[in-house]
Image (cartoon, rainbow, N blue to C red; front, side, top):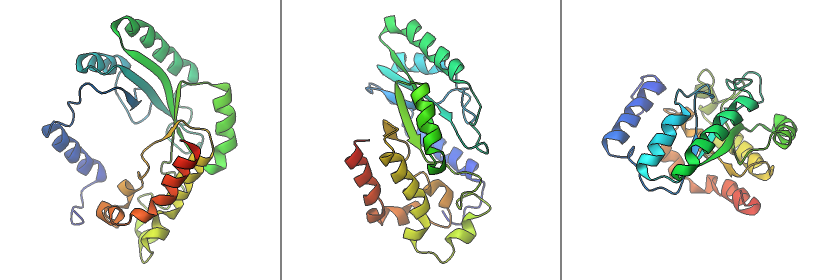
Length: 219
C-alpha cells in the first residue's frame, strides 16, 4: 500500500504474522530447507539446534546452514563470524543428528559484488563448503538504500531502475562461483513505495536475461 508510511521492518513483521496466521509457517514433509541463518549471521538470532528440532518434528530430511559472508568492509557480515566457528557448529550438529535421519550441510550465503569477484573466488577455493548461495544485497553505495532510492527512481523507466541490481545478479550467475542464486528480485523490497511489486510482476521481460543466465550456467 503506497499510503503506508510505517518503517519497512514494521510492515514486514505484519506480513510475517499474516503468513503464520494463514498456516504458511507450518510447512511439513519438505525434502530440504537450504537457506537458513543462525546467530553466526548479523541478521538472525536463531540457534542451529532449534532448526534441527523443528526439522525432525516436521519431517524435513535435510538442512543447509547458510550464514552470511560479506567481502565489502561496509557490509554487516564482513568479519562477523569465522569460517572455523561456522564449520565447527555445523559439522558437530551434523554428527549429533545423523542417527536421527537428519542431514545437515555446511553452506554459506555470499554477498556477490563484481568488484570483489576474485576475492570471493579465492576465498571459496580456500574455504570449501557443501553448498554456496550467491546473493546480491544492498550496500552503502547502492542507489536502493533508503537515503537514495526516492531520487534514483524518480522519472526513470522501470527497466533502468532495476538494471543495476539485475546486472549484478547476472554477474553472480555467470561467475561460476555459486550452486544457486538467492532471492532473485530482492531489490523489490527496497523499491516500495516508489515501485510496487505489482509493477515488476507486470514486466516479466525484465527477468528474462536473469533466467537466461541461470539456464546457460546451470546455476
